[in-house]
Image (tube, rainbow, N blue to C red; front, top):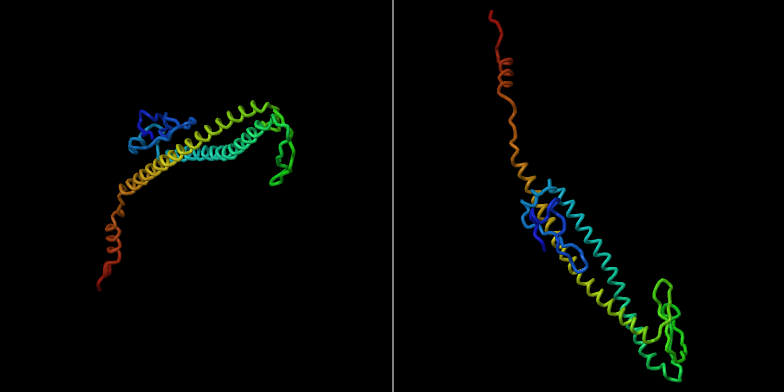
Length: 222
C-alpha cells in the first residue's frame, strides 16, 4: 500500500500509486498524513477529496464485478474441458477397435440419447460463436490441454487480482474515513472560533426609557 505524500501523488492527491496488481490494476494510495495531504494542489476541501476517493472506490467495485463474472465463466469452462479430454482419451483407446463405442449424447438440458459410435480418429470441437471444426484426436487433445492450462492460469490470476482489489477497498475506505474526520475537525474549529456579539449599548436605551417615564417628571406645582 502506497502512502500519500506531495512528491508521490502530484496534482489531485488521490491518484492511484505506481504499483499495480497482477492484471495491471493500479494500487490505491494510502493517506498517511492527512494534514499534508489536504495541502496538496487540488485538495481544496474535504468534500472535493471525498468525491475523488468515492469515484476511485466505485471504479474498484466495477472492476471487481467484471473480474467476478470472468471467474464464474472460467470455473464453469474448466470442468467442461476436463470432461471433453476424458472422452478424447477414451476414444483414443477405442480408435483401433472393430467394435462400435456405446455412449450417450446431450439433446437438451437433462435429456440424453443413446448412440453407437464407430471407431474413428476424427472429432469435431465447438470453438464458439456457432463454429465447429474437425480435428484429429491427437490434435484435439493437444488443443484442449492447452486451453485447460490457459484457463487454469487465468483463473489463478483472477483470484489473485480479486484479493488485490479487496485490499484496495480497505485502503480507500480508511482514506475516506481519515479525510472525513479531518473535515469534521475543521468545521468544529471554525465554529469554536466565532465569538458571539453582545447587543449595542442596551443601557442607553434603558436610560432614555427611564427618563421619559420617571415618576413626577415635568409636573408643575401649584
